Image 1: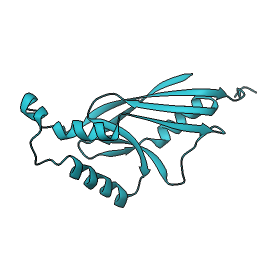
Image 2 (image 1 turned 90 degrees about the vertical axis):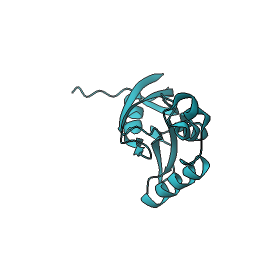
Image 3 (image 1 turned 180 degrees about the vertical axis):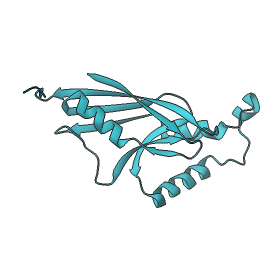
Image 4 (image 1 turned 60 degrees about the vertical axis):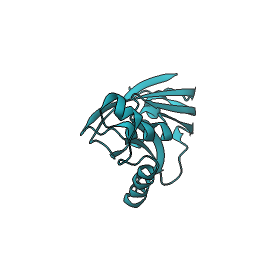
Length: 147
């Protein structure tokens, strides 16, 4: 088993950060060739998913989530805490905080256009997010850089 942390700074509500490269790096470092990559974002106002990281579909995703949890309706959370981010918690719960991706031949088994993204829903202007990356599976032969 291999475990690491991926740190991400976001720009506030609606930010979608492509973390595919960081996850691929962790998989290489783990030396796992066949197995599973599990990701978990800490916090209740962010989520993880896969999507084609293209402006049109990212805009569609944002619009669709805003229809599910619009900014202009009352939320009981806001009434209790007064922080205005009830919709942030709802969106994060709908998408979810974790994601598992199979790995084969030392690579993520993602589709051609499928990218791993962190979705920021918090209404604050920026957040520092921590994603725990746990990789389990069979390791390939160890390679050495010594000659």
